[in-house]
Length: 220
Image (tube, rainbow, N blue to C red; front, side):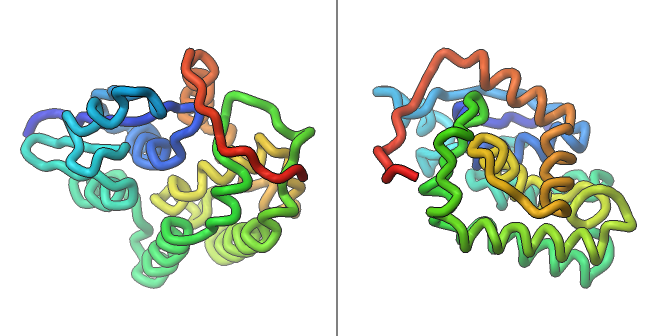
């Protein structure tokens, strides 16, 4: 089977692109990367040249094509079992899938009010109060996972997993907007942000020439 190809959007903004990209990088899996700038006149056309959904990310592995973040991560777990992208224990794996799908399907207030932008410091414009319930739930998830599985390592389920990929963009949002976290959540967010792969992503994001105008939001 030929090598992996991953199509992504802007590293400054594309939380969904970050998730499978981080899974690949953190697992040491070699892949070819192509970035399509978002919110440009030809963005959709350029994405449709690869992905039938017209959205990023998109993965090609030989004849296999996958075009949704969590589905890509699931495929990588199957294609590269040595990477251990889900916990081995069935109970832990079920728990990891549950919190990953909760992130995938929910947290609308957090997404809307704290849009991902890893290139800027927006602490002075913190909008945490507009997503207070979502922020509290994320911290509850992080603390619960760390207390139950933390003996196995510094990540949500001890070893790095897809669950960490799903919550990594949230750690960037908390950092960008200066969200005050409980000590256990702050420690976990710091672990994610310190990963060399995360630093690589952020450094590249800061060099990007494109910018996206977010909808005007209420003042904090």
